[in-house]
Picture (cartoon, one colour):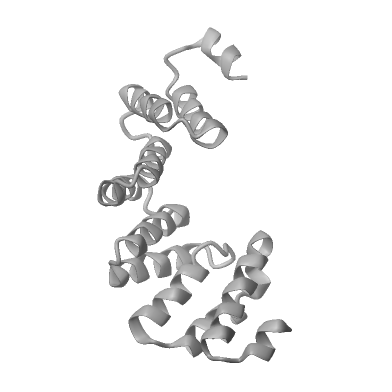
Length: 173
């Protein structure tokens, strides 16, 4: 499909964004992905998805502060995207900017409460900032119904909470 699209219009911004994600996810070729995302921005300077791609590559490359700045650009283009806030929050978590991370993860959840992505990171922030495993556990237990494909991640985290609280028998159940 990409080759057909290139023949029709090689300057189509979405083509370059798509190729960027192709290199990012398909081959982990981050430099090629970056080139494609930046090429997309030449044709469409407000391509939110290209900024998300650039930020994702930068984070994978360990350029986490630069990644956070780029996620913020994506948010400025689409402040209603829960994914943008989630990704920024996860990046801020990596930077140990827990207060900002909590704000952005909560914003992600407020925009898409049925999307399970942000809940585990937010639960860990409750533990890190407040030393409150009970609050973290309640968050995940209350949203198990939304876990979907992330059910294993939710259950793994709940098991970790059991271990931290030395409730080893619960962890086995």
